[in-house]
Amino acid sequence: MAQAVKRLFPSVRVAIGPAIEDGFYYDFAKAEPFTPEDLVKIEEVMREIAKAAYPFERQEMPREEAIRFFRERGEPSTSAAGRTWPRPRT
Image (tube, rainbow, N blue to C red; front, side, top):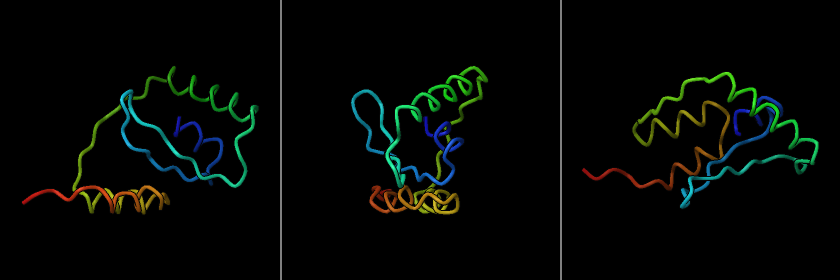
């Protein structure tokens, strides 16, 4: 979903929500709320992305690297959230 939203609305900022029982959710920072028409377009792009069958790869990285990763991609909400992630025990 986030990939579809970013394709259609590049200026939207994405923040990951916490894990929940059935997965996780996204928060989107957008000047105006999504309209019903926007949701239809997002769903269409989501179908295109699913049909393309892009590979998914899990990446693990140190906390500070993850914060930098999101900050460099213009996602300040996610990089800020990363500061609250637990630090690894040493």
